[in-house]
Image (tube, rainbow, N blue to C red; front, side, top):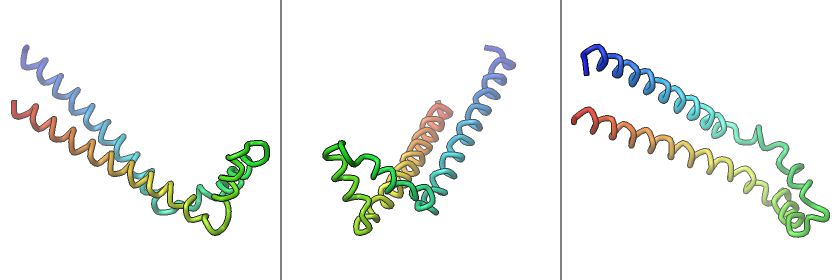
Length: 107
């Protein structure tokens, strides 16, 4: 492989890594926004759970249970836990990818 070809491969790899980093950054920003204000997108959840009532059988009971004011915290806590899990997964993926790239660069 010529020096020019190696340089073009390196440039393409750098661009790819920058795009991946930007994608991960945008996902982290979205997850952090969800963590900061989890209630804003949950205002419609009790109404949506109420739609499951009626002839839905067990879903109606679950909807009534979760939409009651006593257990409203469950509806708010689930998205928080999911957002935290997604952030942790992304960080773990970034660290694993960084370690792989470091191993490849050492070879």
